[in-house]
Amino acid sequence: MFALLYPVLLSCQNLVTEIDPSRLPQIQSKLVVNGYLSPQDTVLAVSVSSSQTVLGDIVTDSVNTVRGATVTLTSEGKTVTLAYNPEQRVYTADARPFPILAGKTYSIQVSVAGYETVSSSCTIPKAVPVSEIKLDSNRSFSGPYIDSGWVYTVRAVWQDPAGETNYYRVAGYAECINRIPRTPTAHIDSTTPRVLLRGIIGFGRQDQFISDQNQDGQLLLSARGEVPSFFNYSFYDPTTQATYSGDYPYAKPLTIRISVLQTDENYFNYHRARQQQRQSANNPFAEPVLMPTNITGGLGCFAGYNRSTRVLLVR
Image (cartoon, rainbow, N blue to C red; front, side, top):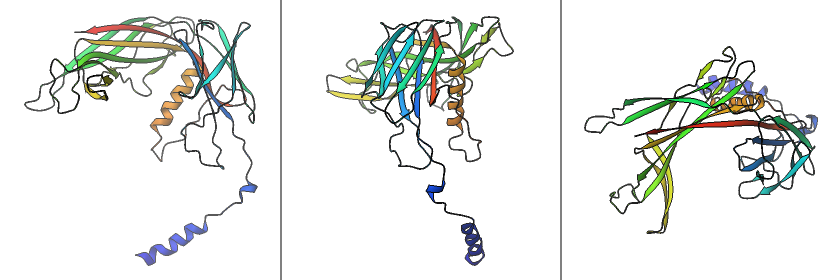
């Protein structure tokens, strides 16, 4: 068998030609800027990193953060400079002196030594109220002698403004208060702490993005979002002086918060492409996803959105 494969292996090796790196075109690393402005934000935040060239040193960090950049936001003659936050590795500023308002246009400029200065702008969309949260439920069956629980799904309903092109993203989470054992085998009693648990509602990687194409001015209905059966928690217990974290079944009453983000086109296209890229990450047969950008001279996305939220209590 090896004798049959040996010529094939040799022929494959002969197809490989090593090229001197000096003969390849030199591509400079670019600044990658990501920032999303919303009237609901209390902190303005922009990440600045550098793109990874095909040829070059391998960077261990998942994001090649760029420090020492000058990041400025401008709108109607007013300017704010963002300062680098080493803990979060982003550039931030207080939003109160520089409020983000619907209908206003904001510009960004980022400059740092060794890179081309980049810029972009965005206009903040208006908020579209969530008209209703549709709740559906059914009993889950795990097996004999196991208590069945409730599985919840939700859908958001909102009125699309007529006569304009609109883009949306739907998101949400549920939270509750429950007693959590300090260890998986511990008994829950009156001394067990009551802590906040939170679970992200999944609307699907692509289903969370909706446009009003072919449904302008209509009542829009989101895809079904599934409320997880287990919520995440993290708390510090002063009794044991230890921090505990993990996931645990939710308890009623259950608070469900659903948000509809009206986004600009750049936000919509960029984040939808990111989700497509993540879906195909481990598929060798998937076609490559081209990431859109609206950063002049660089890469990334600078965009705006406006969020409206509706709350539903499940008892």
